[in-house]
Length: 113
Length: 113
Image (cartoon, chains in turn blue, purple):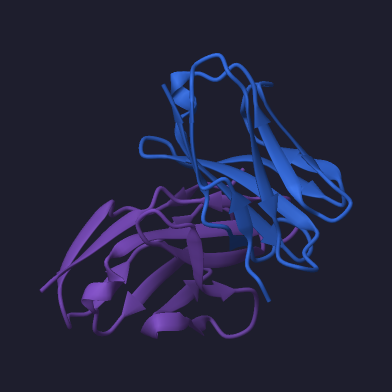
């Protein structure tokens, strides 16, 4: 089976712009979770989608949003980018709910200048 | 909410020596436990998991971990490390009745030739 794929792998944006990241889960997996990883804060949970519904959300401002499509692919959007949004954004897929084992993609490295 | 503590942020160890990376979690409810490894510029790879059954869990690359319910710990061990084990290691916990993963802050393992 193909693993979790994320596009793009690298992205450079300017403050104030918006960005959309994409994640394709492992075939058959219905849950997709998103995480932000930074050196100072470690791995922080953004949100989880299951069958196109947001099941859980972390403590991030409303500038961070996401959605999931009927084929389980997910997108994450960040509007009005800030310098502090520079991070590695990781997507993880799970067969059932997000509490079961998760399989991670390679991440998207976002740099905000 | 859970908290996951990885007491050692950095662990240097000589090649072929044994290593233990420590992980403690806060909850006393039923949990699933995981160890992930992250190599530079990559996503997280699942090393091993405890879902139920035997408290000694064996994973990939010669790693094993032991679940200790009374001490709420899930320490990772390897009897003889290799240079290629140099990476960041993350402990993760999810509550069986919960809805998200909780990650520790990570332990950077450096294997010295």
